[in-house]
Length: 259
Length: 253
Image 1 (cartoon, chains in turn orange, cyan):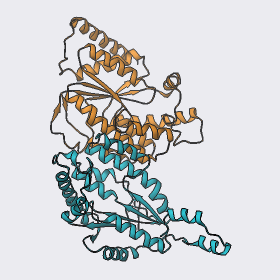
Image 2: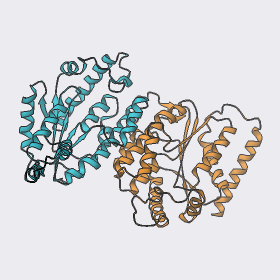
Image 3: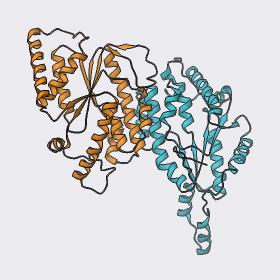
């Protein structure tokens, strides 16, 4: 069960106190491997018999298109862009996330309000204003903060799609090349994430490790989060899975020792 | 005096009009605009829900009925923020007069009638410029409804408040929705010190009242020589039929 707990006044029109699904969020900067981990987690959870829904930013039916076209034109002011993102967030929360939770899904989210807050604060938005607005947002069951050093992020971004206008903060750091902007912008963004992670009690995951180690670290935590849920179908190879679970636990411990 | 959210004063003047549908506020604002232009003031204008970029999303949400009370409120705030930054703020910084047809109070009335928390929507708009004067055109529900509904217009889904499930009949729904909005406006008159105008008075009497109040707040608002181009035409013996069109479009009385 997800306790229907909001950061503030909540959403109008929701009567129930609990939702049978689970809301799990992966946060972190560009290139940290959120989508890879979500793909892995989704497969793992589905093989365990859970119904899984995965969604991310700018995919809302309402404002997704509008944001994308505004990003192409670089035309909106900071406040407008923030409100556009928040509109998309509200739309996805009400139209996709809450209905999925109501239907007992495990919802894996690629970024939540924390990315919007970090991005907005780097651009000088009022922190109180942002927190007041997000009073309608549902408190997730767990939030993982995938944390990696800039030195590890750069090659990943280059291998994936290169430095983008927005992820390099070129809108606020004009007159530099994309690499310099990227380094400066991500440094500022990581600092914001770091303080937001403490403020909202996110579970920190060291994403400098291998993809496998990161996966196992998250898997271990999620197992606890979903412990009170019953999967739709019990897997036949129950003992094997238990065995695997033990292995991954011992591996996770080893990783800690290595650090 | 118009003020930024942080309290800093802006050299320009911001006058806004509010009221339920059918209160006649837009007519009054148009009359005020012509009167100000006639005196040579620089006047910029901004209308609720008209940002060229955000409006497309709002329209899409309304057409496909994707909007919830929360996203309805947020997308209108995005629209407002865009217009504030592009239309209102630059003109106010330049010392001009800005007239706005509906302002944050529309959101406070309408979104709260839709069920969002009054404090929440006020915090969403906390970045808004504080207007020099905010006029509220007070009209009875029956009179406003008669003005709007006498022609039996087709009411749109959100306009009629159909999303609230108040009634299956758009006209009944619209009436209940407008009544809730009216209640919210009435609560706000003291909260925000709105300048109340009796909208049941004849048009010109209302306008005289508006002008009386505005007059005291004009101060040193930016002026232009409105007909400078006419002198050129006269002295150069030109007709100016291209010029006249463009200038008229920019809002010459």
